[in-house]
Image (tube, rainbow, N blue to C red; front, side, top):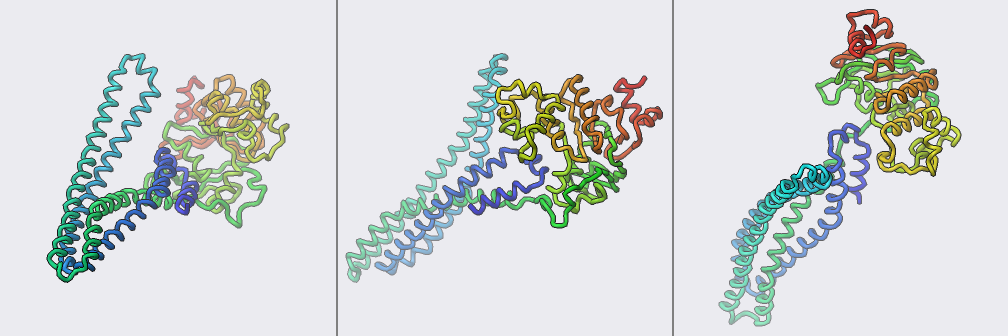
Length: 486
């Protein structure tokens, strides 16, 4: 319970970059399989180890008490047992790891075959996929078989050690029969007859505990992940911040890994109500700048100032709740449409309908049987990609913060809808500072300024008409490629 709570708290507070580089299945495995091992298997196995250890010690004590000379053989038998146990545990652990590694491809291949069953049948390669699956099972069995053989190897040697104990217990009792109590002899021999099974079980449980304790290490690893900055700070900005949406970048350097900056020494100022277009080739650092604005990627050096306040000095929630973004990939959650638009019930139905109207979704929502109560499936799968994008636009219209970021917001919609959205953004966000990342240059020609990035550096920063007059400018070349200038 304590480890699970620690794991959950730390994973939820991990930087978003952690989720980008860590497969989702690996995180789910920590919360499911590893926690299950911790809760159900380890306690019983640890209990069995303690029980078997005390049973073996009790048996040896009874035999030694009835025939004290037996203590002379305990040390060599114990040494032999220790050597066999350590050899088996190390080998068993590696064999189990091999078996686990070879098991995953079977499930993976089976899942892929089920998903692509239509394509497999269309190409008539069913037999090939069956053979691949059988090869995976055969490989897994070839790794599992040595594990079974190792168990038999252990059983034979532990039987031998048990028989040694029985033999010496009986031998010393016979040799010392004149001075030994017959009742004690019977008790010691009967205890000795049971020790073989106990020794076998003790080794197996020790091996299982050593193997499964890895689950604790895996949970501990994720429970000690690097954390994001504080959610809120005491001396944060006022409730009305940002009031103007003025943005200032001072020698800003951003990167995803230390020593590999994606943006270098970026310095510029965006006035309130400016419409800034950020353009550049793929990999120029456009999206990296927006990630730095939300502190999803922390600055390596330099500062970002919004209304004169350094964003690195305030809490993440205080920052992110005051900026609106319409992302390139629309994000929706399973629940009602109203919950997706207004998760905190901060707005009235009239305000929500108004935002839907401006986002050109009102007619569509009115046509739904449940209206605003329409159930959105996980990830918004029961809506088209364009409709999902419009829902994100409606959400932004509802919040309407002084600073808006558009990350290729119209990439998934047709040209006609794109034109309608651009018209809405121009009218509804006229009093806001808007940062637009766009590949369609025709949508940002009426921007106040254009920021051209290349290889992580600011190469041009001026009004678009000024850059178009300079035929040697990078922006002019991009506009020419797009067919916007002759």
